[in-house]
Length: 382
Ligand code: DCP
Ligand code: MG
Image 1 (cartoon, rainbow, N blue to C red):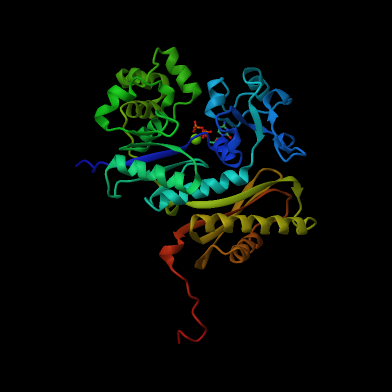
Image 2 (spheres, rainbow, N blue to C red):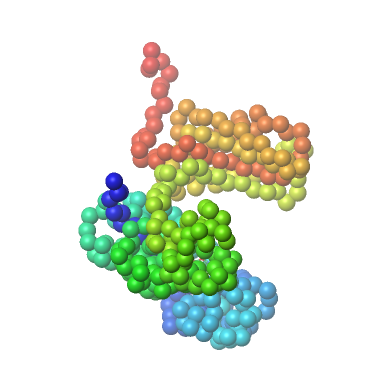
């Protein structure tokens, strides 16, 4: 029996960090703008109130471009390029420092906007998500346009969407019509629309694999699809060869894993110097509480509660231990997490110096599904 066809979207924001900066500085619209400066490249206010922006030509240092507007890309400036090299290509481009708090804010906004239309969302990073539209009523084109409109209304930003029967194809398709694109594709269109693309367009074929494929005269996804799987196996091993073959035919049955299916959420930190459980007790305790607070915020943001709190310790000899504690009541409360994690810490050996401390929440439940958890009042159960 074949599974019913799915309808999966991949949504990726257009020139994300740069586009958020253009919301703040609309006067830069239409100009080449590059994100990647340091705080000294923050625009300065002139006596007459106008802003003076840094230019790429003023940049000195070893930094790389974080992202660029499409106008800067037209001049050859892309993510991960050395900023000095970019300055040679686009000396007049505006240079701005990154402001991650803003990007996180807009990331939350666009994801929340999508969730009002389709709740089954898998986070794939700050500017991209998978969305399972299989059970959402409506024509595919109309749904895609509604998603784009919701994102634009909530943020003022554009995104590009691919909608196909699986994550692999949708990830390829969201890129095909950037920016502000909507690409819908069925399995029958794979030979015409996917096979002409370079093999590296498949997420999972990195620079190394694509170089090796090219040496075997396999350049496009179509070349890959025509290659005898036994030949691929000789060069790439059974597992990867099978995956390459399936991917080139657009086959992928991975589910969209929503936050509620996230197995665990964790926070950890490696200390600047190794810490002693007794002598550095105060610092350790402060770091520990901070980790628990961050973890609580992560859970809160994802709408999750946890029934198992654990800790991870790495000692100065790189050995690692973990300890877990099951809670009677699921929680996302920082103080409750801190208490449980403290309990775990008491059960771990502390006779060596520590390099790393981590706190993990697992056995996760959606808060809404748990409802308001009421503690039984003493005596009420009798
Ligand atoms: N980013 C980064 N370092 C990179 C690539 C990207 O820090 N090497 C950041 C900046 C981007 C954001 O992640 O704005 C999203 O990455 P994308 O690859 O989706 O790039 P953009 O959204 O900027 O552009 P596009 O329109 O191609 O998606
Ligand atoms: Mg993007």
